[in-house]
Image (cartoon, rainbow, N blue to C red; front, side, top):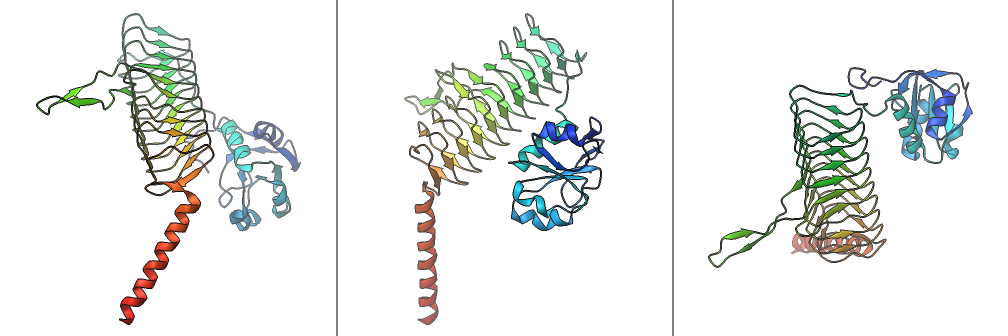
Length: 345
């Protein structure tokens, strides 16, 4: 059961409404039966919805006491008697949609906290919530229903569309953002890029970073992640792109639509990602690379060359996954052979 102190439910809903919200088909159970929330298979009770996907959850599915479950067609027969069944092509996706019915995103509480500071010439959209100690520079534009949490800082001239959420201690500058953009706590967007050249005495001279950051619709930047502004052009995150926590994007990085960059990954300046690229945790990409559409970069990979579209790479230096795995297997065999030699003299 979710803790109502932190995740209050929007109310109870009947199975017909839940199925419609989830995009699932109710194949058994009373459509008027009401549920109060969602929970995992192994803890859900008769008033809650759960889901099962894949063989690893089969035993938990057979033993569940949930009021209803979302399953794929091939697991409908495994649902215990008395548990309502919602059938979906992707049970996890359907469950996510149903969970959002019970626990919708935070709605703004319109108003400006008396401790907030708002600069001259700002345009604040209808229904915005500006939290305690937020600081908004001059000539900032916020669309309708935006939420700025405590201690958020928005630099001069920034623009945000409708329904954006800047969470506590996020800071942003030199930025133009679309609709439904989310900056998680402590996100840093628009920082000065890491650009400098040494002079004749070996001292570093900063190259002025004169670009912007463009965040297209539905971009999310994770907690304590950093996105540097462009040096001469712009840093651009394509629509729907999501950065996990502790991600670093250098100046002039550009991502396509729907890219995913996972925790502690770093992408150096001027690298370009196509659409729907995945960069797994702790991967590092050098600068000025081209990563093709739907390529996948494995965890802890060191990418030093362009990656063609649709290619999966792994290792450091990275190489196609099949080659990397073959190399690892060969090393294990060599190590085992050496161990035998060492023990036999």
